[in-house]
Length: 142
Image 1: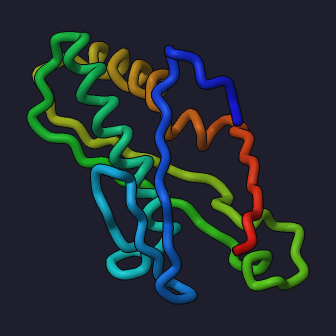
Image 2 (image 1 turned 180 degrees about the vertical axis):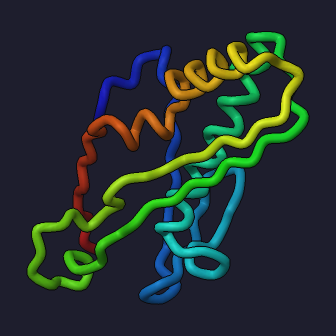
């Protein structure tokens, strides 16, 4: 596991299989079910949208901008060939994401441009999507 210094906030969650397409996820503070309302791909898009919303709120606060409304639209295409075990050169994940932030705020266009740059540079989830983040998958057989 990566360095667990005091400056890093660590998150752990546990997912328990209900069926081939459903899983209960427990974060310790909340529990939800993947596959009941949305699928894992949609959760990924929702994570991007949710983090852009919270980061956008923090950046606006730091810039003294009052956001009246914010709509985040996230789109991305997945080639499911690799997922299905088919021969392909395509990655099994998103081929790319497009995000639109529609904001109504008491701010000039220049202030909003600075705001969106701040959001892009500070959002943890979009950082993980844009930059390679290592993952260590281990197996425990019971």
